[in-house]
Structure formats: C-alpha cells, structure tokens
Length: 130
Image 1 (cartoon, one colour):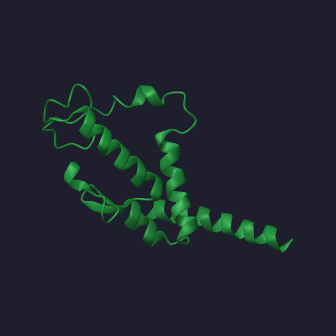
Image 2 (image 1 turned 90 degrees about the vertical axis):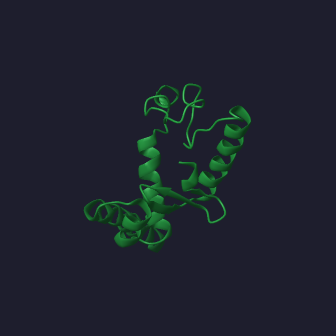
C-alpha cells in the first residue's frame, strides 16, 4: 500500500514489518512513484502497484501482470531476492537474527543464508592468505 512507503526513513513496510530500502530499491521506488503519479494522476487506488486495469479502482493488481515482462530474463524475482539476502549477510555479517528481522525469514532459512555468507567470507579470506 502507498502508506507502507516511508521514503524519508528509507523503509517499506511489508506484512506489517518495516524493511530498509537499499540505494537501488530507493531509486526505483522514487522513479515508480513519479511515473505512477504522472501516468495515473487522478487514481484513488491506495495500492503501490497499479496498472491500467486497477488504476481506476481500489482493487489491487494481480500477481500475474508483472510476470510476462520478466519471462526469459536472467534476473528473475527469485534470483534478485536471494541475491539481496546474501548481499545483506555479506555486508552486515552472517547474523541470522539480523537476516530474520530484515527479511522476515524463519530461523532455519536465516541460518542457511548466514552459513552461506560465512562460507563465502571464509573462502575469500583463504584466497587472500595464499
């Protein structure tokens, strides 16, 4: 929803949990909001994502309208999500509690990402020693 976006604090609430926005996501969010405002100037839709069918209603866009443009792309939504979670664990350290909080992950998933990040960090440290 639009009220879930907090550009000033670089946060987006997802399922009631505030998530930080990285530089790229913030840039894209600002660009989308400008486009949304220009394209559907008089929309009353409270939803962040609107399209031609939903801009003149208060219903949400379906989950399927964004899929066709992404088909065949190397950067799938799943790959982007996984990459973002791994990047977070490499940047802020392999802390499963941090990952669980930032992404709303369950404990086992957060520990898997932390373990993967730890292995990459160890591998990098080992290469620098050689």
